[in-house]
Length: 349
Image: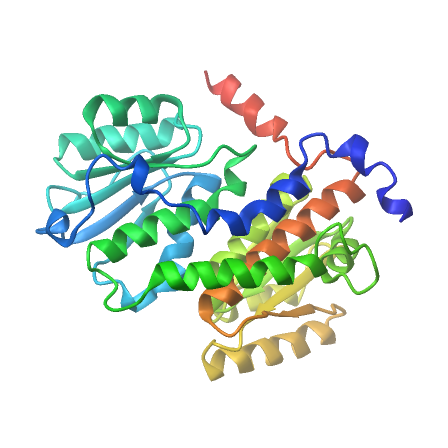
């Protein structure tokens, strides 16, 4: 296809190979990287979970919370910043998550959690966090080496939910079996989205063309909440385009009114729909879609594939990975680097 004649020249970091490989991350065994055996007694006395991470490094925790929901025995909070909540203490399982291992916000949160005697787990691929984990013999979930943190959340999800399962916090749910089944299923499904299929029936490619030159607004219900946020991150970082996301039913109580006088007309709305969402959420999709049409906008509706929640969630996430990577190529750039973000870190000092 003409759009992708320069693919090899542009995709110098081979992002499509990394996206293709993500189902394999669900097959990883993290036992070898742990300093202790995770058994239910290891978690005795713990009353809450706090995961500290930024950007792509927070995604795994967000996905785990989205998937497990009320089945998780302890409350889980994700901290995206320098400070931990006041309740963090000896009854807290604290997970410091930074792919690079050098994220300053996460290192700050870890230092606070240590001072409050929280039980520590480190999830990283290297850097300062891995040094700390090894020197202090913290339980360590060592992530595989990939080019960017946003390409590692499947591995992080596998690591986290296995820990929660081994601690007895997810009841009888066999998360390892579910993730392995999902990996096998995704290996089949991704062939319709990958570079192996650059035909008109490639949904990811069609969506990329629709979003090209547009500000993307990604809407989802609770079942696909973390997928919508992943799409936002992917479009920002892979395509270098602005994108925003919101979740039903909350968006109908505020953002909905903003469609009376949208500031710009080059907006593209993508609705990520799950058959598993509440019936009233399903109706909200329909009513919102009709309203947007009245104001001159034609939302693109994407129905999640899959029979289970985790299948739908991860299929929608990997779809967004492909969409945003194609969009980067359409924009004439290498999807992988995040030069503005890296320069910003240097400017902070």
